View 1 (tube, protein in one colour):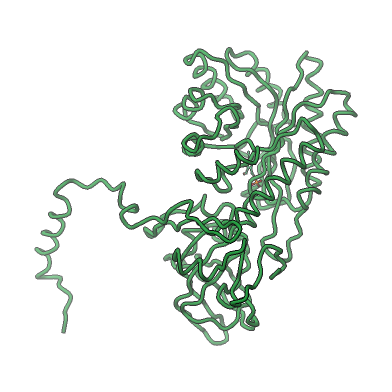
View 2 (cartoon, rainbow, N blue to C red):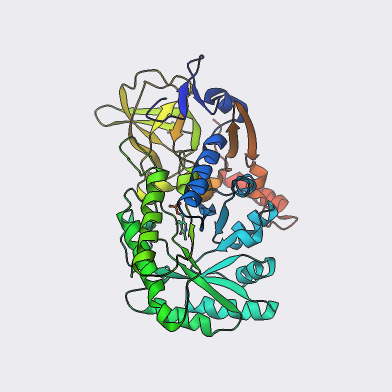
Length: 456
Ligand SMILES: Cc1ncc(COP(=O)(O)O)c(C=O)c1O
């Protein structure tokens, strides 16, 4: 156990080890930057969630929220561990279908699905659409009519609960782009509107109040409101068959974070759900939970090679790495804080305070504003912890940087599950006329006489 993480250790070579693998050797073998996923920990988390949920309430299923980290390999794991899958785009749907994920176990979310995405979902037989707005009610009903089949839907409700997290990852308030608010009656209106449409079977309701939630009170309040809303519809002769309470369970990014354990989370949400159903005298509907981050975040680390080091005496020491905001935009996007350790000498005393800088051409590309490290040298391997969620899935080719590979570790073995992009991948979508490259070269040579760099 190192750095308060039970899944990290120091091996006999005095290197950092995870899932029985030497992370310094993994960096050497696969290159950096590199996303490394601990398959054993992902499966452990998935099993705890799935079995913990069904043991507390037999009618409870767990979906993995693919936005946290999605690729064919992750779809396989989710399916093997008995999870459903939450997706939000045609691209995520395509990823899942290509990996053989059963479409009937997919829930399609999103606040602005296109007709093309809706048709794709209807045609492949997606299990549930979580309807987010009136336009979607109309489009989905039209798509279902065209396909000649009914589709099963949930209505996304904004229960008006503060998640106590970053504003950008808080979603359940009245002033949110997501869903129909409870407090102004929109949720009831949308429900009636959807029921009046042909081809839509309203199975129930969905909510998701936010992400990286570190205390469960908000989740419990939202749960009670959703049950209360369901109970209020009994008078209209409607029985809610399903409630999807979203995801949001937080994780430990730094040792200061103290998220609820999976068991505490399930006790709190399922407990609140069952008690409220009892209090409201309704038969408990089927329940769905949709964690993403809690499944994969702590199972992922990113390995970087340290390069340039700039020491500004009395100000700050910048330690630059060979990745940054292109492979992990979270620090730049919402000030996310991480911890790091040297993979090639984790036992050395961390005596220096440094900033870890990314390589992108932005002053804001700082991976960690302030962290303690041993004195470092170019070539050291830096391991940034808890990067398994919303890193790879949010990565970009900013500065035309190829995206890193993803390597999965299990029981002392490693395998590439997403290959590293090449420069050819980066340019592969550029549309150049056949003669463009030659013409550019010729034009450059023509200018050359006047603009040639002097080579003294
Ligand atoms: C609808 C929905 N479900 C589930 C999730 C997963 O959240 P988390 O990764 O925090 O568990 C999100 C995240 O934004 C979401 O929007």
